[in-house]
Length: 257
Image (tube, rainbow, N blue to C red):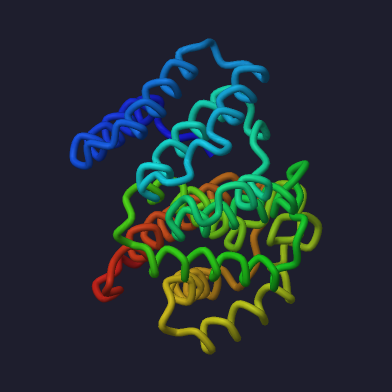
């Protein structure tokens, strides 16, 4: 989950703005020294050095300042390796020193890191578990809509999960490659979920998805290029609209795929 390359500079700009407002000399010193560490070419050793520096350095800082520094570390580490940081370890190390919403985001990242929904192009969780995780991310987003620092990553996670809900994975497609039929298990779960949680964006997406599926009689041969392209385009539109809606307080007026 990579942020845009320029975001690291924006993060530091935000940090320095915070510091200018509070005039904390210790915080300024920590930020400048940390910035110097991040000037080094990224490597396993430089990531370890930056992480070691932050351990013990964030105590006493304003949580927003501490969180911005940790996000800068994450951005730097991800430029080297998506597995360069252990999110579960980060939660244990920095919980209480960074904003609660950031700890919450790291929790979802830790779950995905420890038990990814897709690995080797195959789903690694049940359809029921996939729905559960997706709704958890949505509930988190709704609770923290105003936190711009985590919006991009939260949406990345949500998009990844909703995509999997609608399409499965290459080696675990939601339509059977042989029979061309839609997963009976997913169909039953999705219909029940949309009825049980009608107030959610996920339920909206599932309802729109069902309308499309009913029009194709819940069958798709992926080798039929035109039908397959329409399926993926429809899923893409539903996912894009879900991303918009999850950050909106009102789902009325949603576009229909």
